[in-house]
Amino acid sequence: MKKHRVIAIDGPAGSGKSSTAKLLARMLNFTFLDSGAMYRSVTLAAIQKNIDLHDEKKVGRIASKAKIEIIPGDKEERLFLDGQDVTWKIREPKVDAGVSLVSSYKGVREEMVKIQRDFARERDIVAEGRDMGTVVFPDADLKIYLVANLEARAIRRCRQLEGAGITTTIEEQTASLSSRDLFDSGRDHSPLRKADGAIELDTTNMSLSEQVEKVYELACDRLGIS
Image 1 (cartoon, rainbow, N blue to C red):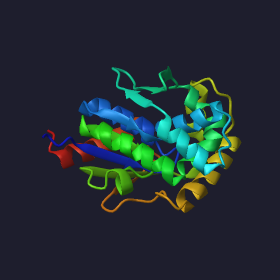
Image 2 (cartoon, rainbow, N blue to C red):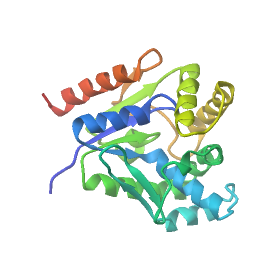
Image 3 (cartoon, one colour):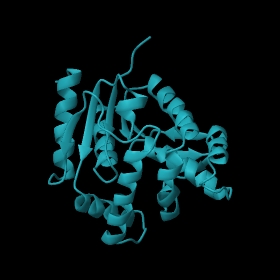
Image 4 (spheres, rainbow, N blue to C red):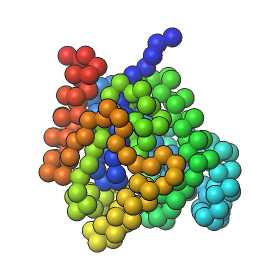
C-alpha cells in the first residue's frame, strides 16, 4: 500500500497557517486539511443544538455523532456538517468565541484525530492546526511551525473576517487572539507547542507570497521535488 505524504503546519491563530497550507497544497497538488475547521464544525453543531459549550460530556457526544466531510475542490475545500455546507458559517463570531473551549476536550479531539488520520490515508496532504506535528501526524514528512507577533496576527484575522463579510476591529481581534494563545498553550490535551523536528518560521514581516515560497522551498527540499 502506498504511503501518502504529509506536511504538517502548526502555530498560533493568525500566523498564516491556513493561507500558507492552502496555497502550498495547490502548488504541490496535495489536498489541504484544515483541522481547525473541523473543531469549528463541532462547535457550530453544539450551538445549533443549544448545548452548553461548558458541558464536556454533551459536546463530546455531539462530536461522536456529527458527520463531518471535507470535499476537495479546484479552488477551495468545502466543509459539510451533517450534509449541510458550513464552509463560511463556521467562521461566525459565536463559533470563534467557543472553538478554543470545545477543542480542548479530550473526547472531541479523539474523534477529530480519527477523521484526520483517515483523510490522510487516501491522499497526500498539507495539514494545518495546533497539534498536526505533535499528535496527529508525529511522523509527518515535514513539520513547520509558523509564528508572528500579536499585532500582525490581529490585522490578518481582521482581513480574513472582513473577506467573509464579518465586521470586527483590530482591538477586538488582539484581545481574542491573546486570550486564545493563553488557552491553547495551557490546555491539558494536545496543547499548542512546537513539534520535535519542526522548522520554525517567523512570518511577522513576510508577505503571504514570501512565506508560501519559503515553505514551498522547504517542502521541495525535504520531499525531493525538483
